[in-house]
Length: 137
Ligand SMILES: [Zn+2]
Image (tube, rainbow, N blue to C red; front, side, top):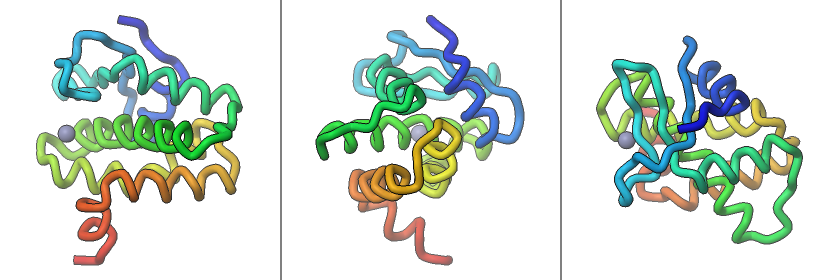
C-alpha cells in the first residue's frame, strides 16, 4: 500500500477535506477501487495510479486508447472521491465523478485541450450514467 501524494492532494480538493489515496492491490479483482469512508482513504488499482501519475507528470497520450485509459482512471478516482463526499449511493458517486473529471484532470496538470478530450472519453466510457447525470433534475 503506497500513498500517492499527487493523487491525494487532488482527491482532497474534490472531497473538500483531507483524504488519502493509496495505490492498492487489496481491492477486489472486479473493482477498480473502493472508498474506505470511515478512514477517508481511497484505494485504487495500480493501473489507475499509473495512468494518473503519467498525466500528472505531463505525459500526453498519443493514441485514443491511452487517452481512454487515462479518462477511465480519472473517472475511477473521481467516483471514489464522490463516495467520500456523498456516501454509499452509487448513482450520486458516479454523477459526482462525471461532474468532477474536468476539475480533477486540471488539478493533475492537464492542459485545456487534453482536459476536453479526457472529459469526452470519460462521458463515453459511462454513457449510461452521463446522460441522466448531466441533465438537470
Ligand atoms: Zn461506487
